[in-house]
Picture: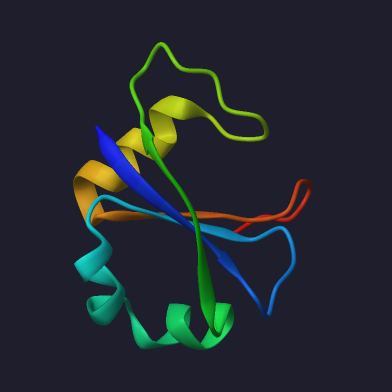
Length: 79
């Protein structure tokens, strides 16, 4: 799955993974408020075989398929 990763300028070590960058306009208001301004970090092709630091790849893929986005919080912080 092709995805786009953005970093929150407000909340350090917090990233938003998107299946489609146009979804930025349709994120829940509470999430937009939490993250504040976002900066683009990278585009990546993600599949189950790819290992991610600090994230369960299967969970990221599941969230991207079901809601179009995945929120990556700093290590040790729960959603």
